[in-house]
Image (cartoon, rainbow, N blue to C red; front, side, top):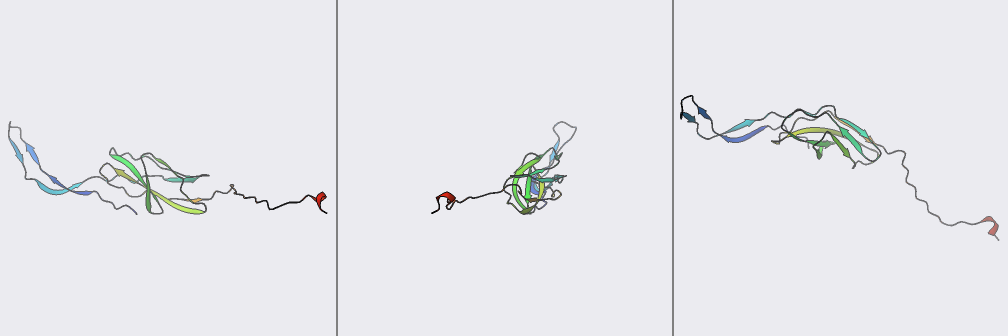
Length: 144
């Protein structure tokens, strides 16, 4: 599922003001409102490379101080997370094409927009599976 950009959280808050005069403060009533947090930036420069037994994904690191992890999407569906800027997907099926995207997630659960798409086709040419079944044989000098 493609992430929905959500950075508004309903919260309770109170404002307290302190004056220069000792002991003089003002407190508001406790109110209900919205706190707006900055969304993480979308990850940049996603690349995907097909290897013999896996697909390697790599991208540039985000600079946000509150970055928690990255969500990894394959064909529009979130299927993994990573705390680093590399991920190996070993669940690909031969002769299949996949579209990958990455989203950054901060410590408050805010999800960035998606990275650029990286398209890769799994094609494990060079590996051949053979099954040899011996059904019988004869030697020419033993024929009567």
